[in-house]
Length: 478
Image (cartoon, rainbow, N blue to C red; front, side, top):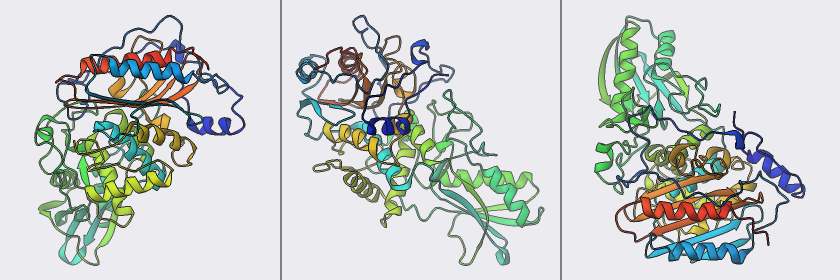
């Protein structure tokens, strides 16, 4: 199995002086590939005609293994690469770039890097780091069922898990190609039904409601375009969902229509499980759990590390937005877009990220009113490296040429497996941020934000990929 660089290993190694080397023994032996059995690849949210492109091949010479004693690229050379990207006719009227030494944070290239722009889905990187910092990677949320015996009433209570299974959950037994537990379907409504059967005699007549009142909405964010739900880019964000509102047969990489009301879908699926156990169930829809009701069933979501991996790899808008709203609630605000935005900026500032001028209107990057600078994105990557709850961030980001929304970008080039990146695309906006390893083995944090292009993603993506490939191919130690 291919090995990834774990930040838990990276950080202590860096702190002891940066003289040791960490080699990816298996990376050079990989044949890049990606799952093609799904009808369509995972959407890169709002730009509905976006498609991945392969970067131009780098000059000869493989990207080397990570070496913490590797020379830092010459800043003038890196700056020249950034200038060339801005001058490229495939990029837009506003192309801003930053490149930092990932180990030291030193600036190697700066093209208007502190100017804020529309970041698209690179916003999810900030949501991920802030949530990990606030909650910790092992944090889970709970979905519960309460029981009011006098009224023979069960209430399904939302806790923020949008990835429930309609039946039994796998509870970490389902692994991805990297051997990591899959977040989707971790807990299941069938598990809740089985617990109910231990507390309420089977065969009983019961009523069943769903309570998601701690997630006041708007279930469909006002910042999001209406077409996105219809085309399967996102589901409503209401504190509870089965398979992120998609039909059971649709996987993480599939488009598909979403439930009109994810809470009602969850209620109905729980009712079906209870009916199969012999209960006579009458559903009543949305209602508050009764005062004094007894909690008789609880399931835990996937740990936050798996949730973050999911929404970074598949650019899942709904799960990212739900995560932001959970941060708002945890910090004493309401589980609203504004609460999530305020909590995210607060946590980033606490990590030392410069937040002046940053504007967030959602946690997913669907809003075209979000404003983030390339410097803020790259500084977030560097800041995450040293903080205890975020030091494994690179493990959660997809690898270029191999995974997620960058699965076919860099495929077949020596860069594949040596770049961790988060994409972003809206109409006229192309963004990419991540960490890439140079031919000399030096790790660089970068962010490119391009806007003002004509309709279409292939050309600006190709220009960006060639810039990052040139960074990776750089044997240009200063």
